[in-house]
Image 1 (cartoon, rainbow, N blue to C red):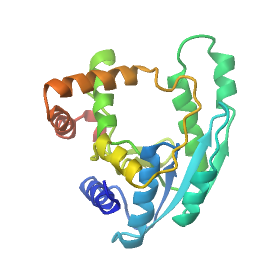
Image 2: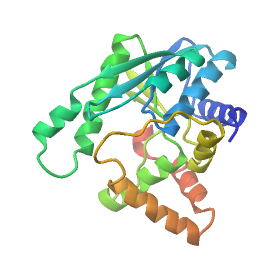
Image 3: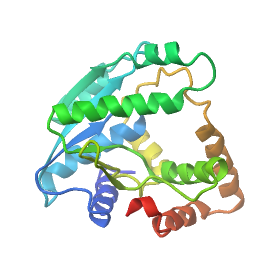
Length: 237
């Protein structure tokens, strides 16, 4: 995927779901993975020519799991003229104290989002952008079906009354294969997630399951995506 195609995809998504308004100050959640770095490129570029004027600020939350060298990401943000912050947290220590065995992904996600929300409010950001792509949306739907017994996935845009912050996902129409192509084409400075549970979650199982279904039914992921978008999920309203 070229940079121009990334701009086209993300602009289409922003317009389709009305994600950005004039005057928005948007916090970009940068994990260090390929998807969040693609989001950084997309939003840094779009702010220069998108009809509605907005600002972007980038943030990486350091959860305290270990070595997390963000030097190359800092350099990329300088190159793209994006204000960048690293938020140091004690989340890893809190999890170790509270959860003695098993996965602590759910609590980790809750604590991480809380820290990012607080940072956004403190720095005058009314929106937070995350880099979830089309495959993430499909996997979330499958997780919901298999483990919760309902048809659900996250929305491209969600307003949270308790924080006053709107979460947007400008990349949800981009297949993961295109994201991988973008990473390779532009040699993105990805940083490995130091979390000890990375890659051994239920989501990884569902990813493999969808890959097998797709192998036997080419084009099925696009149909799943369309089913989600057209599915009238009640919490999206």
